Length: 442
Image (cartoon, rainbow, N blue to C red; front, side, top):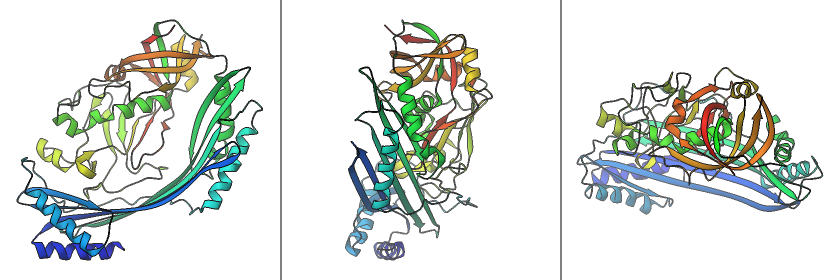
């Protein structure tokens, strides 16, 4: 069923039931992926999904309902269920159906080409064989995958606000396994856009990264100067990003509560949230409440400039919404990253002198407390000796506190490394240097 039909049916039901303020949010998406193992296609999946979310304002309370069924009776029942829900709500939150922002940006991302199952299977197998062809030490266990995703979303409300957006991305990964004299090591690499130069370079990069780990030794417990690879630092930022939510601050679940305008990081640290980042395939010019999104500086020169707000938390705190409202009353960032510095990675090694270059962490979300900021994660990487990257090291634990880590950043590299988009949220960070971090080794 087309959105125009969904809108007409729900709007008529609202009129019939006396619901004057309401909002309809509709999404439809399709995805397809192909995976390989042992020189064959091991998995091929495709799917389409659609869902309509409805909310209405009655008696000062907001009621919600949703459905993946689009028969007229079900759509009419959405309105009834949401209206009934308003009668059971007891909190006194000030809620609203948004009338619209003055202006909205225009997304610049290009949708990926439409790919059928045959094309994806061939590309996945080509990537797989190219990975085996890099080095004779590549062994079974090596996997590759290619995927493509597209989505459309529509928002309409009783104030006449009507917005839509189309997004999509393609990507591929190589999980290379190598074996050298009985020692097996692996490495994972991902690239957006299956036709990009980065995608073509994946086999060499993945296999090379795995071979670098061969012969890893253990290190003694102690304090070390640490260079954290941007890929791992962005994972740390992701694990503690909920601290920047105004909702969590109001619930007493963030150490950043009440700290806007205060110093929370080193002078060289700035953090931005940019829903329209150039080069990002998942751009959005409005949030799930219909508010225009925009690039914002969350931390500038170490000072917390703003938390992330939706309409409800903005009203409660006397602030302006930052356009970060999501379905279900959640708040989330978009392209959320620590800004790049001025150093090359080699310059960070030189500043570290002797230390450790952390290139991998395991179990981060299990070993991190998002409220206190404490973390303890098993890691791997390389020794830094005399300002140079040296041999691989394994099985050591890095422990600390994320908020203290932000305060202790000594230097940043000049390139932000981005993660894999999770919907409209993706995290990024340059490589960072922190001195005298606790490491538990052998």
